[in-house]
Amino acid sequence: MTNFMERFCHYCQSSRASAVEFAFIMPFLFVILIGVVDGGSLYTQYTKAQQVAESLVRTARALDVQLVADPDRPLTNDTQALLRNIAARMTTHLPEDINFIWIGRFVRPPDGSAVRQTIPNGMTNFENNRGMILAGKSDYAAQAHTSALEALDESLQPGDIVYVVRVRVTHGLMSPVPASMKRFPIEVRFAL
Image 1 (spheres, one colour):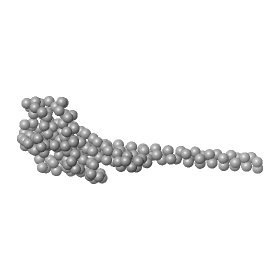
Image 2 (cartoon, one colour; image 1 turned 135 degrees about the vertical axis):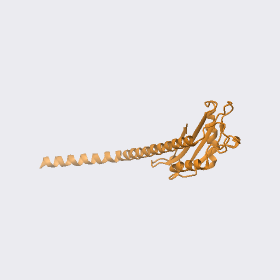
Image 3 (cartoon, rainbow, N blue to C red; image 1 turned 60 degrees about the vertical axis):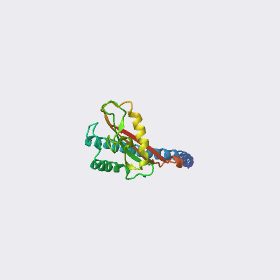
């Protein structure tokens, strides 16, 4: 009988110790699990933004008239509608206030003059061209245009045409972080 009592007491002590260890470890395991879920969700969102940006650039490039000096609009109304439909794949579950999808078409004329944005008006009236917002507020067009123009100004050769797409989306995190960090911005740029 004493052998049974000793084993029973040993079992009770070890199970209490396991419960205490579990109480200390469980919050860390929960945070790690939420972090893994958030990381996977962010990666999925980033991948989707990258795919949409690439689809937009490749579609615009395929439907474009590849003439630098063409004074017409580089994107017809039908092409613009198609690009907006592609962009809609990204915006179905995102808030519109801080997210946007922007496309620009940059050209360095054959004479080697400064790089010009040709959307929406083509080569004519290029001073007012700032690219086109496919989704979101139009307030972001000037900022997206300026940053892309600065990046391309040194690299484009005379006669080059480059399409640039910038996608900015915000992803809500589940992790137990402060409210100011709950919205995680994702930005993707793609040029071709």
